[in-house]
Length: 518
Ligand SMILES: *[C@@H]1O[C@H](CO)[C@@H](O)[C@H](O)[C@H]1NC(C)=O
Ligand SMILES: *[C@@H]1O[C@H](CO)[C@@H](O)[C@H](O)[C@H]1NC(C)=O
Ligand SMILES: *[C@@H]1O[C@H](CO)[C@@H](O)[C@H](O)[C@H]1NC(C)=O
Ligand SMILES: *[C@@H]1O[C@H](CO)[C@@H](O)[C@H](O)[C@H]1NC(C)=O
Image 1 (cartoon, protein in one colour):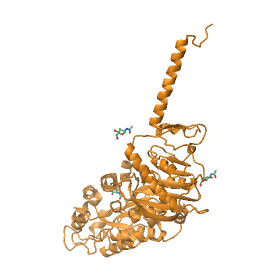
Image 2 (spheres, rainbow, N blue to C red):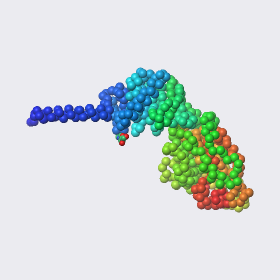
Image 3 (cartoon, protein in one colour):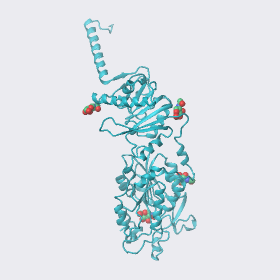
């Protein structure tokens, strides 16, 4: 039987040498790459942690190897450290950070923040990076930290800001401070969304600090405190939910915003098809005026959507500025002719109903040809206008399912969501808007593109108004004005060229050649 130990002393020596050498190489590697090994202790007792993607699976274990990605030039690293040291010294001087606080840096990309914290004397500091890591806070227990700092690679990069806010709240101690650095929040809308996000905290201070170097933008430094027993995270949601008939208050920044929107066209245009075409260039989209980053989810609701390409494909997807956010899309369309084309669309939810002010079956006239001949076509021929909820009319009237738009919005949309609505409902807008305002559901909507239907001048025959709708331009203008007074950024919208083209081929719309859609 052979003993596995090498007997040859030379062999033994070379073995030892190899080991020594590889140990040496390891040490050098470790120094170069700042490899820090944690043995049975939590990471926070060490210099700092940074967790790249590859370490995901190690998170739950107590022995974790944390590697700092040290691919940043030494010079800029030194400047970053100086920069953060001055930031933290200021915070210490103002009493928001104490040397013995346990501290967390969120968005610690290369670790300078944590080194700086330690250099200024806050030894008990850890850092996490949000990038490539879906649940960065998971390892921290409730009320772990006395101080949480989010660099511009923190909140600004968070994919789910609401979750971010909840996790900061959870891990911060009562009486602890949360300091966020952001390059956003430059406009009142964005600042208000940020405050809304952290509304369980008390706002202590908001100021501007210099960026890292002269080329970087000014940074907003916002300081929050977590007070004991104040958790109002869902307060507004609850208030808005359900059947309550609550008018919502309109913050002043919304009025300011509306002042900057394109003015309403007050004079009834003699040639609306030209006026409206010109006006499209003036439209001030909300995302072109403000930063919409600090919202929870992004939603687009096409009410009276008709075909996919009309309201979504060739308009929302192509033209609406989305600031790279991905939107949840809802198409509300009762006409079953269009339903098939929605079934295959990913990310689009079809609600096969007519938007209405309550849940009920609606009946409307289908035999338009007959009534047009004797010149009475106009009377209530708007799609839901002629509705009756009595069943006597079934033989003459077609029926569709109406649903309560306001209540649906309240059940699906959250106060923190960003919501864009396009509404083209053939005259029903007057009922819908009133209901949205009465129920407070209007407050959930950020921006509206509204086609208001009125007895407009016709293209074919000057001096002649379209008999299809009864409301006047003045009434439409009142509707727009009242929405704007309610803090809703509403735009006078109209039939697009694509829409006109599509509508012309609708048999039911053939008569419109004489009017608007030519
Ligand atoms: C490190 O930085 C250099 C130059 O800035 C860059 O070319 C290289 O791709 C970076 N390496 C990694 C791993 O990020
Ligand atoms: C931690 O906080 C969360 C929310 O703030 C709470 O739901 C949870 O029960 C807490 N966990 C413990 C162990 O206290
Ligand atoms: C109204 O209809 C919608 C959509 O079908 C449904 O979700 C909602 O529960 C209904 N509401 C009432 C009060 O019946
Ligand atoms: C549904 O739309 C089609 C295509 O535009 C149109 O021909 C039809 O009249 C519409 N149906 C109803 C019930 O409005």
